[in-house]
Amino acid sequence: MKGFKQFLLRGNVVDLAVGVVIGAAFAGVVAAIVKDLLTPLIGAIAKLPDFSELSFSLNGSKFLYGDFANALLAFVIASAAVYFLVVMPVNHLMASVKKAPDPTARPCPECLSEIPKQARRCRFCTWRWFEAERRHRAAAAARVTWADPPCL
Image (cartoon, rainbow, N blue to C red; front, side):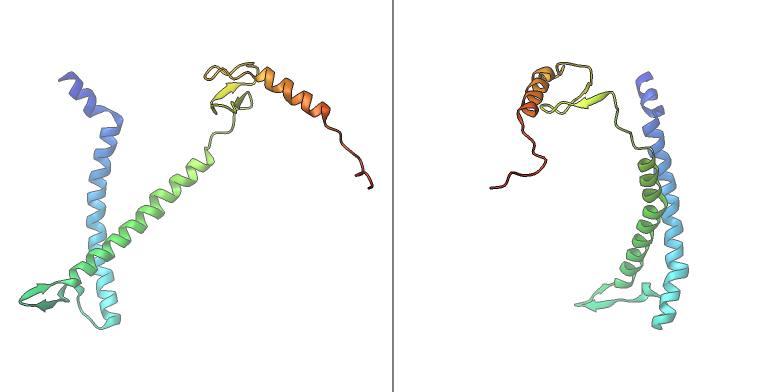
């Protein structure tokens, strides 16, 4: 029982429960906006009083495509609201809090793990920095640079 109580009181479960409740309430608000405001507005422009009454029959079966249009409109409004009111602000916040690279660490070219700059060997793959640096210095010293290219 103690473990179940800890599971329920963990932050993720409580946050998810709050999100589901708020989402259900938001769905009701969006459905009301679509049904009571947008559908009559579009219906007045298109000279149709209510989308939910739009239907056609085929072999005795009635297809209510007007209800589908209302549901599709509600989905588009809800998606736009979530994107503009949740996703965009969170992305902006995450971009402003983005982790700056650590100047005391460098990536290992072999395993790409972060290791301290003072390290002579990678602790994960044991790649030897001092040998690579010695080879790099020797190659740089052997290079001949010209101020002006030689004339042929």
